[in-house]
Image 1 (cartoon, helix red, strand yellow):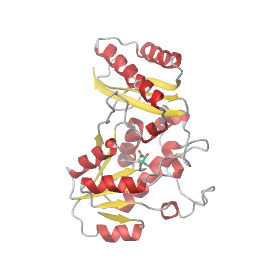
Image 2 (cartoon, rainbow, N blue to C red):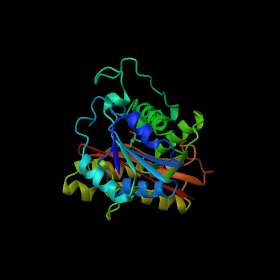
Image 3 (tube, rainbow, N blue to C red):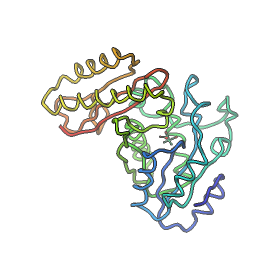
Length: 282
Ligand code: PAF
């Protein structure tokens, strides 16, 4: 497995590759990421994984400085998958005009209005940062296939929009969320949880499952179901950003006509913001 740090060297290494599948990550890899790499292997001969903690997708009071960086362990895990290339650029390589504080002349992608709701409402500019780095990474790697996890459902939606609206010749594959035995969705941020919080954290998925159960048994009071789930979490000390039932294809608020749905939530347990979702058919 080659570890490559510059765009020029990556381009040279990728010359002549017949098929490339790409898995962008911010590192601190867990079983969820490895599942995405395994999916990628079904679609191309050359697998490229990027590890880049993208400063543009963090708000001023978020965890950019503390975001877990575990490069050696990440590379060991990736080597075991048989992946060919890990791309680990410095910030300057990706954003030459960014000095760590000011963006300078850095050009950003403006996400569509759907990016301002759900997670975007609590994290203004987050999806502009995601769309910008993903566009840059796509242009650098030029894969035929890219794999993203469904755990970040709104991110996956926005990346599909990026591909559609900028006519990118890239097939986006969605990987299922990998969970702990407790049901907690795997996430790099789970490492911030104390042992007690980790056992409490499965409540988020239980609340979502409960909503899905009700809807699949013909309850169409989407607002009421979301509010009760939100109340249960709040009563247990969570700070809820949202619990919402949406059309899984458009991310608009669900209507009683919808068949393909998703229930999504984001809430803070202590200082850790967790997100989760379940997509389902009615
Ligand atoms: O999901 C992530 O890890 C990041 O948002 C991504 C897609 C790698 C962009 O920085």
